[in-house]
Image (cartoon, rainbow, N blue to C red; front, side, top):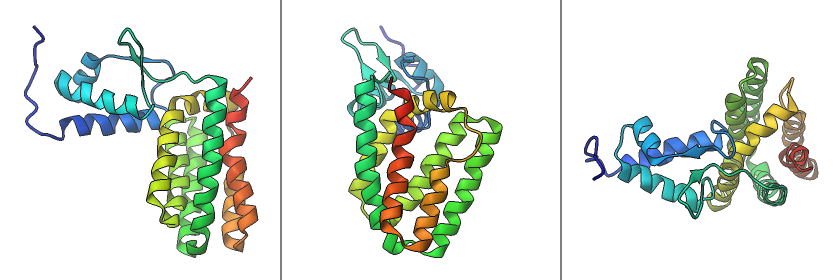
Length: 215
């Protein structure tokens, strides 16, 4: 009989586990192909098996975790074809989000993007892969929020979630020395109101790194 270590009176217990795991996966805090157990998840978040199982179920549905026929749960280790597909989705969705954000790109937004880009540079200096991925996504999310297209942004975040562990692998391969130079192109295009330049900079930024993983 499975022992329940403690009651979970809060109906949001599984949501807390879900959000915590989702953030870790999206930010590359878990390596690709790493196995997870319900017992381990429950212990980490101080919950019983039930909310751990529900959180895993939701993450499997979003493509953030894989579930084998034997019941093994793991972060996805993406094939080249899957990486190419997700890179193409990033290009399509994020270019459109940036284009929609451009008319609302006031100077306060541009200043904020420059601050975030500076923080990305600090993460590079520290060789903090998780911090780098987190601040890089913050840069993109800050811009895309101005598009006022929540359904489209949700789709972009689902792609980021599926790519999170792979982005960790990419960071290790790229051995970055500075923040992505395409971010400077994005900021320059926003300042100039240059939509073609912005679309090109975003497309290049979200695809050029992932191409390194496809051999």
